[in-house]
Image (cartoon, rainbow, N blue to C red; front, side, top):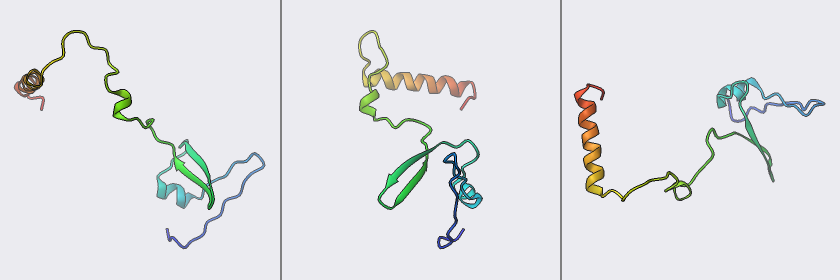
Amino acid sequence: MSAKLKLTATVSSKGQVILPKAIREQRRWPAGTELTVEDTPDGVLLKAKPIFTPTRSKDVFGSLPHQGAAKSIAAMEEGIAAEAKRRHARNRY
């Protein structure tokens, strides 16, 4: 679709807008896609709603409970190596 091509849509009496097929296909927005609507100085901005809520690592770090003493880096590396060997022995990876 050309960037210069101006497509139009009409607002229904229920406030519904049907986006032109060319836009929906270009954006890969199938039926049922949830969109966020933002009022900007230039007009209305539609964006596909993110599948997952944005998070920061500092907000979730340490959120899982753990009992016992903390593991050392060497102990963690040993555990990773042991699991890799176990999977390799079973031709899993």
